[in-house]
Length: 233
Length: 233
DNA sequence: AACAAAACTGAACCCGGAGTACAGTAATCA
DNA sequence: TGATTACTGTACTCCGGGTTCAGTTTTGTT
View 1 (cartoon, rainbow over the protein chains, first blue to last red):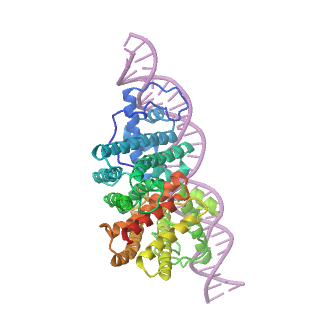
View 2 (cartoon, protein in one colour):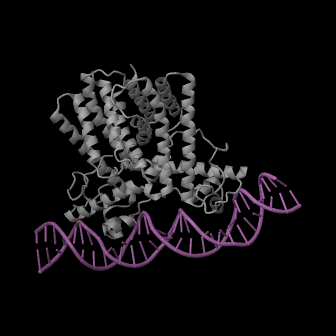
View 3 (cartoon, rainbow over the protein chains, first blue to last red):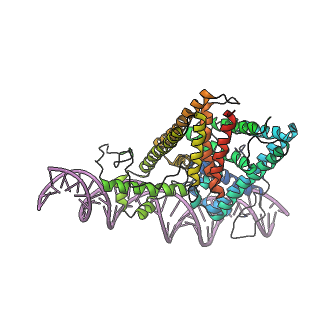
């Protein structure tokens, strides 16, 4: 969903050790540094390509070519395409959670009022999108959702979990807003929270369809307008 | 983008005669009734499957199996997968334009005020989505956008055109609103128009990811709220 | 009924992808 | 140094995908 700051190298908490995801071997070989680099490299390449051309169209062949490894190397790290997909969604979920909560924390540091925090959060998010040099790379959730029949049940589940994380996170902040302000119209907090996910997902699609880099940013600011109108005096 | 009322049989204006789309033969064989039925049948099946599992993952094989025709039969109607994709987008674009303008016309018949018309339009759209028995089938624009590297330039172009149609249509109505009302905040009409596309596209993604049929409807009503807050006294 | 055009059938073609197996080798760490 | 990790390389199976085309049936027209 969000834009990754060209991540690699740094060992992310959680998304590590080979074959931990859905592996036959539950053992879990005590990952070495090099192994993790290769694994993350595979994942970076796969994610980029999947967002560009879809999951089914992305072959293991092309991934290993770009990564400069052999097929055996790939299957050493992943049990197959499904396992890779799951690992990708898992990492994606963690990265997003990390990024969003980071932005909320910064907003809390700078401002006291929950509403102003929420508005700043959206603005920070918009700025982040604005700083991307080209079009937003896309969101794995959307990608897998539009290829749902090509992906196993576990991937569908973690995809849904990811969206539920966003709902929880956004709702949490909006709940605080709700305690200090009365909305001009009757709305469900969860719907308002989902609307941010909706605007991001939709913004990415429309932005990409039109090749209009800034559209996503403008849509985020429209959402921000809505929140303002709803709660500001 | 919208939901098709289980269309088939009726010869749609424009989307007809075999191989008219991108064919080698620019001839254009004067289509017969049976030919059109088969052609539309292929397209219906293809569209449904593409929205479920993506373009690349949808094989000609499975399409002709469900359609009960041979491979040669398929290639009689389409020059290949790319040609099929183009024909699908073309038909999709026409259907959407037809549906949206129909809803706007109904709103104009029932109400005089531009703002109330716009609000009614959104409500009619939401009701239509609400009447779907299961999840929204998905939008071809989003599907092709997330597989953009698997689709040729012409398909990308007509996909963008389709989104531009929506912008034009929604902007037209919002322009009228703008002439009668002053918005509470400073907004670009085109952004407001794009937001409807955004909410629909995003709503479909999030709705499908969570398997929550009603989410899309609720999101449309949130957009409606925004318009109300923006323009209503 | 006859004839042309339209609407197919069926089989063959080649390609590339997922996944397996496994023997051997190089790098890393304790 | 020795054991574990992280691979390479090859070879092989199996499958299905897109595309072509020569021939056959169906349909519409006169």
